[in-house]
Length: 110
Image (tube, rainbow, N blue to C red; front, side, top):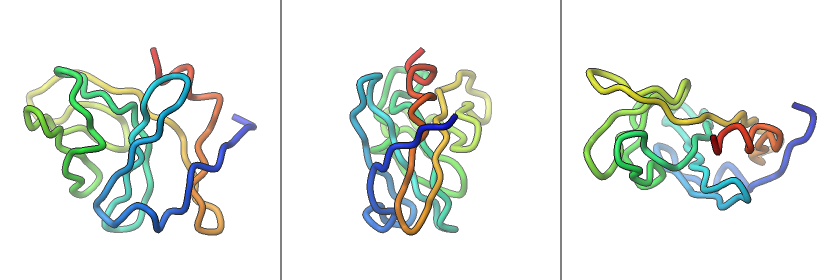
């Protein structure tokens, strides 16, 4: 995936919190877990399009604020009895900065 874009400081996102980043391919939710891992998902619940970045982060999951669907931050898949998936975007943290893979943005928008 060669190209990465700096999208901000990891400390700008609280533990068990999220932020939304606007991209040419749509909104991306950036999530930080209690154990300080960072994930990025398309900010659109597969159920009814709820803004996942406004949901509750718990473990390695986020609960959609609209209808309580639980989405895996690792795979983007709906958990439990629900079915559906949201696109994931590779991210990495270097020197306290969050870097997002630019090549994955077009795929995440599909």
